[in-house]
Length: 564
Image (cartoon, rainbow, N blue to C red; front, top):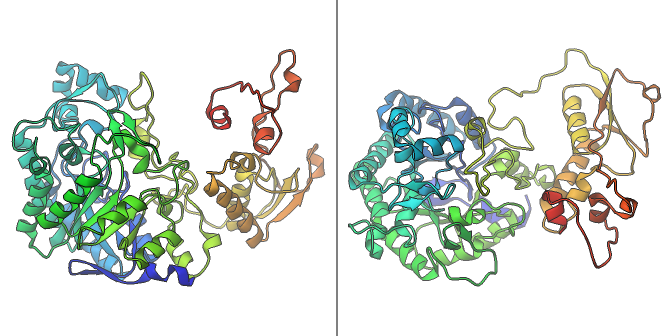
């Protein structure tokens, strides 16, 4: 590997647990070992997903959140003893790879639960909500520190969670953590004083208006988080590691209003001075690690940075935590190996948190070790497969239930979290295949067909591979899109797939092949109005065509907005 990455592969400790390298596979929705939307069970698809990444040198693995109580049916995790017996056998497989694994447990979502239009009906109609309660208790799922408007539908008020319910959750944390310890799990992570989820909502003044011992003062606002770690330690022993998923700075101006990088604003959530106080307080309470980034659900893009957010966008704020605590600090958020390794060498952080890159390429750590960076399929931060939630005026969350169940898929890697559904096998009959079009679709087809043993030739009318994605990758913040094009071109070259450039196919008879695949892509829509011939299309502009000083953009979709 490159010398600049060596710090990523130094061992470190969380309490008494030694981790072999500084790369933490961070939790993602849809990757829970205990299922996600469905009733809790030992999820074999998720288990296989993590075991493969453990075999490819992930250091510490933290699967996605496990709700202490089922979202459907309401059963507590600790009631399913069979599931934990299965987990015990699985932990032996994980440990055989040299990796360690923590289970992340969550108290819940509060106002941040991504309610759909269907759930809105249950929350708005008390009678229907009561009828559905044995199956889906929407009121409980959305219960918040105080009566609050939902993040997803501001005409929905989330009820206040009761003290009895808080105590039930704290008890469930302890009982479930003990079962994890008995199953051989290396530690647990409490979810979370992070991203504006339920426990974080208790800590933030703009979401906690309680008048009891869980609201008001600093100590009261952090009481839920403190009592949780104390209960876990009482059940599991002081040496059992407990990590906390934590947001350093909320980056939030108020309900539904997030701050952007470099903006001057008044912080409504946790600011830098409270962050300094909070991390000391949480360490003293018993937490053994802070798994950190920034943001809330009102400033979501800090915790799940899309491609327009800067790389390493949370590093500066998270690095300040290390100045105030003696426990390990992990930083996540579009982290690059170079920046992470440098920060670890300089003792600014202890480890690099990575999530979605493990969805795109489960072997990326191994490739880094083997000095094969150019072979790493890059995550392009698109959110199209892993986190396809969408909220806009008049609509809560338009994500379908199928999508919600399938979170943690990958737009670039269809095999991710799909079990053996898309396993590749040698073709029973090898064929000569012609692919017309050398864009992303054509290259992906050619790559997969070649892996299965077919003989493929790509016919491309231009002199380069990439198609319309070359123009799509043109903006300066789309460095990952450019890396994706480079990755595909390298795979085509490495696999010795025949490419014929400047070949515009006009007739099928020009091609000698058993199968012809059309991958010619879409065609731009032309303006059918007087003077329309003077317009340039989006691709022409993105590839560098001059447009003058006064510009009209016809079409306000993603391409139009991006060009504007």
